[in-house]
Amino acid sequence: MENALKILALETTDAQGSVALCVGGEILTSRRLETERRSAQTLAPTIRETLAEFGWAPRDVDAVAVAVGPGSFTGLRVGVATAKMFAWAVGAKIIGVDALEAVASEIERLPNGDAAGTVSVGIDAQRGDAAVRRFWIEPGKAPLPLDAYYRVTSVKKWFAEENRREFVGNFDCVKNADSARFLDSEVFIEKAKSSAASNAYFCGPSLDRWRNKGGENIETQFVDSAFWAPTAAGVARVAWRRAEAGDFDDVWAILPVYSRLAAAEERAKEKETNRNAK
Image 1: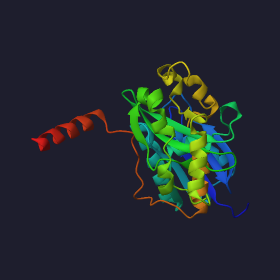
Image 2: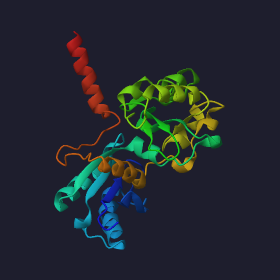
Image 3: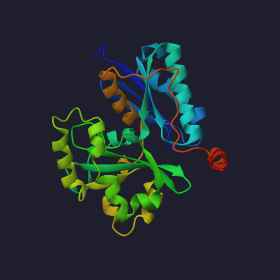
Image 4: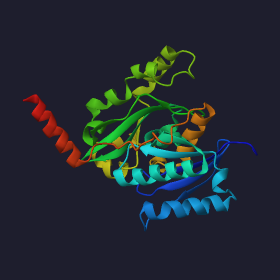
C-alpha cells in the first residue's frame, strides 16, 4: 500500500466531530473531537495529532475529504474552511461528501437480520424539521442513493405511517441515480419494491429525541443506534469510492450545504416573494 491514495477525512456536521485517516480504502483511525470545546478550537490540533500518530506529514495527504452537509451553520463552516485551507496549502485534492451518505456508508447491518432494505437517513434541520434522503443498503455494497438530493420535511410527517410509502416505496429516481452497478435497473427496482414494506428503516443522529414522534411501532423501524451519527470514517469510505472513479471537487468552488436558510434569510425571502406577488 506504499503508493495507495492517502485521505484525511473531516466530519463536523454532528455535535461531536471526528477526524479519520484512510489508505487504499482501509480506515487507519477515526478520532472524535473533544466535546468540552468547540470544533473551531479542537479540529486543527486533532488533525495535527492524528497525522503525527501515523507518521504522516501534511504533504503526505493526497486528498482531503469533508462532510459538506446538510447540517448546521457553524459546524459546516469550520469543517469546510479547514479542509479547503489544508488542501490548498499542501496541494492535495478535495472531495465534498454528503453527510447523509456518510451515515449510510457506516451501516453494517439492518434490524431483524434483513439482508437488504431501504434506509431513510435524517439530520436535524431545526424548527421541528429534518433533512432526509433514502438509500438502498445491501451487504458488501456501497449504499445506493434513491434520491438525487435531500429534502426537508417535518419530523412528524417523516415518521407518519400514511406518508412512509412516499419516503421508502418510490424507486423511480433510481433510473436517474447511481444505478450503473446494477446490470438492469428495472430488475433492481422491482426487487427493492418487493422488500420496501417490511425492510424499510430510519436512521440519523437526532433519532434519540425524535423517536417519540413516530408512534407505537416506529421503534422496530430504527437502524441500530451505533450507526446513527455521521463519522469521519463514513466520510472517508464515500471519498475513497469517488477517488477511485477520479471524481474530485474544485477546492475553490466547494461550499457548505446548509439544511435550510437561516431564520432571517427565510423571512427576507418570504417578504420578497410577497412583494413580487403583489
